[in-house]
Length: 328
Image: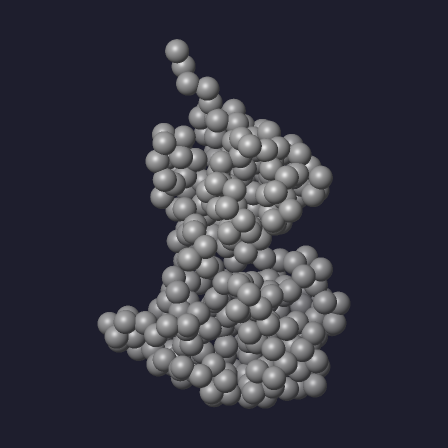
């Protein structure tokens, strides 16, 4: 007698290849359009499924988990970041949580370097000038940016992505510095030629470029607050491809407007898609729509990890990418 297939709810449109494979394996409810579920829709979905596949646009908080049905036993997140899921409450309810770590490392590191170059070399300004028809020819003093070679790069969070950024930056001739909760092993520091700073304040004050590559947790919320941002050199720039909540966005805007720092490259924002209007009016800021991990290869690999986590769970085993509160 065939085993009953797991009931799976997917909250956003995924690559067609992933959706097809998921439909073959499970009793899956797919999203018809690529819009986030409303809170009411998400709550309803969680009442009747065995597995929920959310994304970072779904806030699966304590209240949502409290209202989930008894069938829900796995939240298989499509993405590495899980700050939108109350993992501790899920665990108390006997619900496992998994994610997709490691998949977006290279793609996000590529985008970090792209933002560093875009800000320091004023690429968007040059693009706007040529597309508007305002460029009349080469000039020795036009759109002068800065050379990245020899600059000090301070990486906030030297995990998978931070290390991938360091490797790229090293190839560009940059000096690598980092701040972490815990210092890395000597062999990793040697490979990356990275200098560890126990004091974030001291590192921030001495860097030419600061790259945010740490997750959003209660301890990293506004880690770059107004006081710390003011420590940066007026010629320095900050780049964030991690989580918007790590930077106090209002404080950053004031500093950029006053010339306290030279520029910023942001792929993420403190309030998600609600970008501070003042940021749009600054020509020393490069803004991207959270596209750091947006490659076809990466999105499919993320889906494959979700499938593996669900399939392993369905077979009665622990998902390979299970997240537990002690990891946060």
